[in-house]
Image 1 (tube, one colour):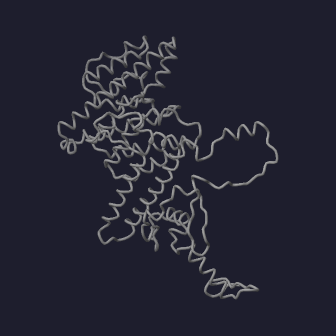
Image 2: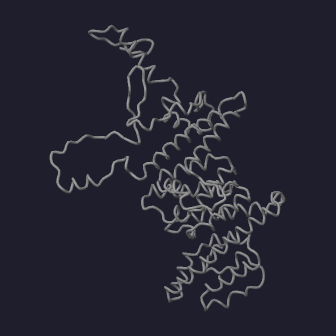
Image 3: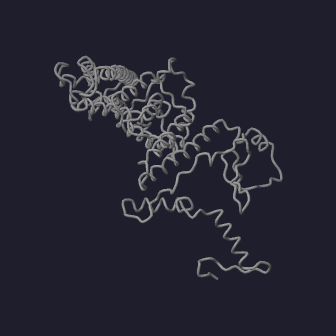
Length: 430
């Protein structure tokens, strides 16, 4: 039976209706804050997504920002608890000691089962546990950043949102420290980078959820900020590790593809100095980047983000209004970084060409493989930044790839170098 005020009328043999209603109100007050943003977050998020752009009476945003210390966890406690006055201590999910889904009593165990059980490790002994905990903590920080962004969008702050923006920046810097992103350009960094400097970062991006975290982080950092440059440089230093091969699992491969898209979006907002640093990070890497053409079966993430760097630099340097703001030092830094990368690119192309010619003796088969393996998009994007010597070098290499019976149909290496000057055996789309 439901009362007029919406409460259910309870009946009991030993307790009065008023006593039961008082207990129900205590439980309701302890477990529900009457804030849809907290109590019904996922449903409200779906409604906000469906009604994007519509004039809503109640916007999808928090009423206040929580204090980070209020949800700090005690790492020494075997189980984490949520203190509730009316209901006692309720255990909730802990990444360190998750509760078993099902308790099964085994009457007898074979010797193989005992051996397998003895060799299996608990979650506390799992080598990637620290990385998984860092990822979960980082996702919580990004949720706080989302809350701040929504509060700034739908509410009026007395100080114009300055305090919230400063707090937002502090959260992003805190996450960068958790990822241990190293800035090799900082004045205090005298020694060169060591392999251990990016160890935590590599462990995090090796996990699909870690790549999701990094993608979301790049989406939330300010356009062209130092944090964006530092994160992008970390990715460019390890292109082989991150984009070397697509995972066989489709969902894991999707996180890699989305990370490449997030880095590309972040790169197109960098200035020329940041682009120079990204290209320099590629050259200084200890591993050869996977310079593959777009659509390659093994993955094209590295080529996608490198092309974004080259295209962004072309956009900045061809815009007379923007280019006039760069001094000679900025231009020299970019040209030095590009020259080093172009040497790496041409060396890779020549090595790939020689290996294909050595492996395949027939001209048609070799031409088909060369067309599939050459990073034609990177070659085309590099053309606006090449000097006369580099253009002649590129044209000379392109003419080597032409079959002997078609070699005479192409002109000499004199004259200006254009995208149409490169033969189709290197790439029909250049």
